[in-house]
Image 1 (tube, rainbow, N blue to C red):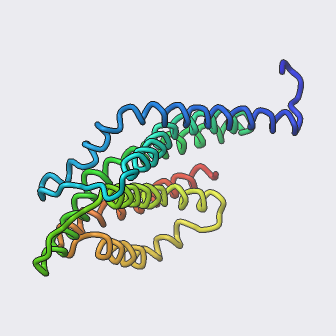
Image 2 (cartoon, rainbow, N blue to C red):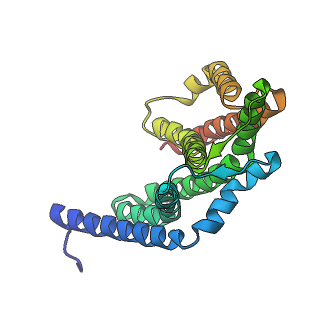
Length: 238
């Protein structure tokens, strides 16, 4: 474009190109993931080995549709960094110098939190949830016959819900930046936040103290990190 000022339609055209690029990356990564789904499914089933549970297909076409769903899920996760890069590249030129640093900081922090939420959901939340449901199902002496489709949906739900919860501190920081809420208000609400986290941990983890701590402590630490960064915003007058 040279030194010519971009028009409204120029911005729309650039946005369209970036969206098409992201869609192309998503499709390519989904197709690539389809080639390795046998290994991906073995990785997802690994936590079941502790309980000796074998997954089953109940319909002739079930495996094919599960693989389609898993390939889209893997493609979405793998393409998110590219989506973030395109978002940063599109928004960054419109920001002021002091805003660019914080925008890049939040973008990198969001990516790190996303990766952390994936690890936390697989290594902490999923084993805890499996232990709870396996123990609960065994109380009446009945056998367990689990389907691959139900397990994939169960795993996907855990990953998505954990990712959303872990992104909540960034939402809080965004509200702090817009002056919709204040750090002093969050400090006064701390006891209610702790109560809410305790209720969340009690509902979504097995009924023992260790499991509740493993789920609740990271959430509370994320809340405290939000308060620290919120105070930093106040000092920088953003």
